[in-house]
Length: 118
Length: 118
DNA sequence: TATAGTACTTGACATTTCAAAGCGATTCAA
DNA sequence: TTGAATCGCTTTGAAATGTCAAGTACTATA
Image (cartoon, rainbow over all chains, first blue to last red; front, side, top):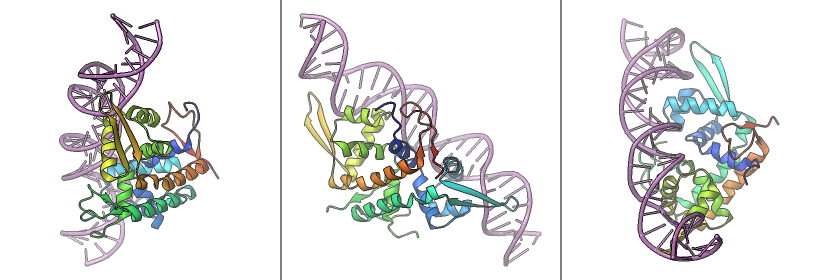
């Protein structure tokens, strides 16, 4: 269990980095600029977002397209590897809609959620 | 986009907590005690693990079974809701084996991984 | 001319995670 | 019988990580 390369472990390690799944999910909808992405993800501060994007680009899940430096205009879009994460997100979606119950609201208070009984 | 309850968002929020996916994956294999789980997950310190388990129990993904207090013997097992996370993990698995390439080793050095070209 | 928008960076602060040690109790090997 | 190992954690203080507010340099719109 030590010396073998375990892709799942690596994948989990990377997918569990804060905001990664949110970012991917947002980019699955459409390519976005930095601020647009930031708004869409909701709650991720620019420092973290920038760092996460660097990493996603480095890993090859996201491609960064600088359209013009000044005025700044950039597009982040998923690579094929990124797009194929859609299946993961879909499963999360399926699980969530089956098991997650609304606690109170969503946007503001996101600290408590419960599972449905069934 | 503010006041609606978005289960996927909640689910991602919760699944991206550090170690959660690793824990679930480990428990998918079999129910485990605290230390056993700790070893199987690998690298999570006990304080964090304990907290994560509390949360998982609270949310209803994991059930804690205290078999004896002294000598201590506890079992953590997935609830049905937890078990159905298997599909998520399976998709991660599929994605990982398709796109993740071994960088160097696995156990010790887990800081860099690359995607395959295809 | 003024306001809002782009993509970020910076530095101070808060939260999270960490490794290490320890605890009471039991079981097992020497 | 003594000592080490195992169990399920908790505590500690320090290190890593994430967050916030503000700012940069510039353009486009009003």
